[in-house]
Amino acid sequence: MKTVLVTGAAGFIGSHVAESLLARGDAVVGLDNCNDYYPVQYKRENLQLLSSSPRFSFVEGDLCDRALVEKTFARGGVTHVAHLAARAGVRPSIEDPFIYQEANVQGTLTLLEAARKAGVANSVVTSSSSVYGNSTRIPFREDDSATDRPISPYAATKKATEVLSHSYHSLYGLKINVVRPFTVYGPRGRPDMAPWLFIEAALSGKVIRKFGDGTTRRDYTFIDDFAAGFVNAIDREIGFEIFNLGNSATVSLNEALETVSAVTGKKLNIEQLPAQPGDVELTNADVSKARKLLGYDPKTSFRDGMRLFHDWFVKHRA
Figure: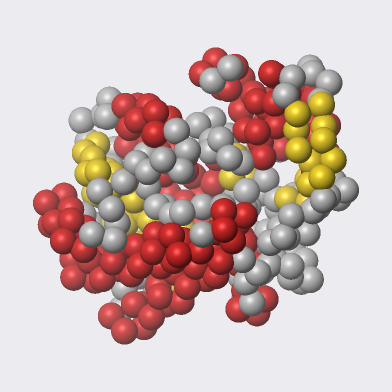
């Protein structure tokens, strides 16, 4: 049995990864500051769900608090790390880059230093598909040099976490797998992300703000597929590797809106707006490396995933 420290355990992806670990018999120590980036109530509900397991414990606090993080490692007997805590979002990072630097870069550095001192067996650090920017090398591969030229502060901080992780592997021999998620969505999803916003607006008759001409494409990844790949990355003590965790099939904004209309049975009220600065034209994951080394096998189509998300939303949020 592993004892896994899951940072960001109260959040969308973190709570799903923690749930998967608990389901297979691991112990989980959750760490989260439960900030108000989106309603704290949703995070409390996630924690309540996890707390039904006797193998879950929770520490509320800031990842930049070095003393707290080191105490959490020591008291929890942590053997593995699942680092999912982050300040997310491209557009907000342009408005306030400093909070992204603190949460994503300083927080990751604090965690890596504590993991080094604790001698953990393996860590997984979460980056982002945003590091690829507007790469023209399609599909995106992990060795793409375009990641050295991020086009938003958020992407820059995520690239920094990758570089820090490699430094700690090189200097201290820490075993670290870095994963790059591609637009993860599904039950308990973040309310600032397009799938949530689209479903909510469709069901309530509110306006959906459509940025650009609708031809931008995203590699939407259902949460269950991503969590399975992430847990496999915890188990594979390879050394240092970077993995794309996406679906590998792209969906245009226009296609996404058509799917939302289909799964909700509603006609959409769309407001056409200009494209936003910092947004990329396309995300498309080459997942061949993750398939080979992690046994990663995403199976959920966007339409099927959105049906599942819609059903959850109607039950818990509508």
